[in-house]
Length: 316
Image (cartoon, rainbow, N blue to C red):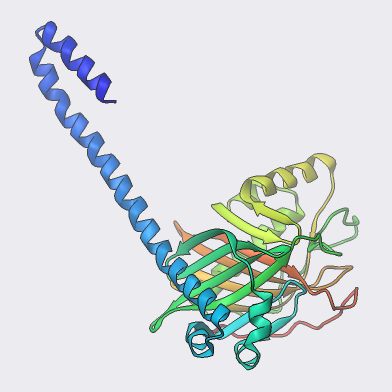
């Protein structure tokens, strides 16, 4: 850009256009100001994500060294660990046997950190799979809310089953789910969640995309999910006239943090084993969008697995 400005000034002076050369300086200054502002925003974004990355690093170190007190201080009161087999453990269970948690958590590579206000997410690769750790900012500092591991192997029963019969109906989760929201944010997220699943059922990629953030990043058994590759898959379903039937929702828990909501859920495919889902929703321009998530199949469950839905209340 400096060469272009220099050449332009030289030409204008040679042509006697001194006034024009002087008048070009505000435009150049505005361009520099725009670059500076972009750099400031990028720097602020990295600093915000850095807080999440530092908390995550502290947890990894504490677990590796067996520092139970430090680990306890970083686990949220509602913390859940879902291992690659779909076995869930509470905060209390982990603290009782920290060594098992440490052995299952070895290895961290290809880390990606995201922050959405008071919620952060760290994705990475470890021994035969991937993981997501969801962090939330409490008054006392950052705490990990969910640690979910996802194997590289494809599930025995996909959560969005293809080739659904013509007689099938997406009542749950498209029209009704066994969860009663207690906040306005939860009601709005459920509306977006149901519209997203309806779009999948109807193979409407454009309608689906409206409920998904452009940076959407998700991990499912054997597959990395982005907005772009999911749109391609939905359009292919439309072209081949196949229908992907979303798995019914059995239970859910919502954690509200302003314009960000963490949704944990248990889904039951029509003909297979249940799946744990963790989703992060962000409100943008009065619309809630899914921006990150993870999915793990419960390997030890029989197929088909039958479990009645149960109400889980929203937590602060």
